[in-house]
Length: 97
Image (cartoon, rainbow, N blue to C red; front, top):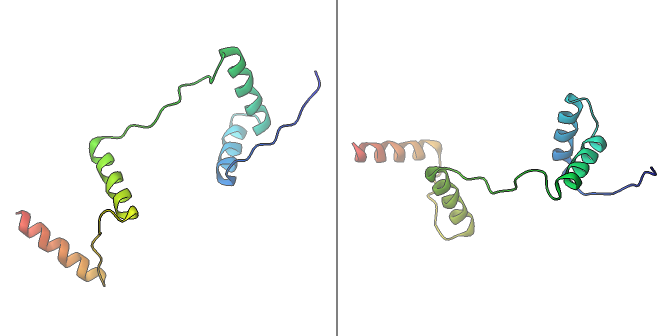
C-alpha cells in the first residue's frame, strides 16, 4: 500500500503533550493518527463521544462571572494594594457573621 502525506495545524503545546503521551504508549504521533483514522473508518464516524464538558452550578456561575467581567457587562472591584483588598475581604466576612 502506498503512503500518502497529510498536513494538519495543531497548537505546538498540544502536539508536544500528545507526542509525550504516545511515546509512553510506545508509538509516535503518526502511528496514533493512523490508529484514529482506521478506527473512525471501522466505526463509521468519530470513534468516541464528542460532548461539552458539564460543570457543577458553582463552577458554571464562576465561569459566567469571568465572562461578564471580560466582556464589560459587569464592573469588577479593583484595589490599589493587596492590603486594601484583604481589608475589604475582612469587612465582607465580618458583615456576614
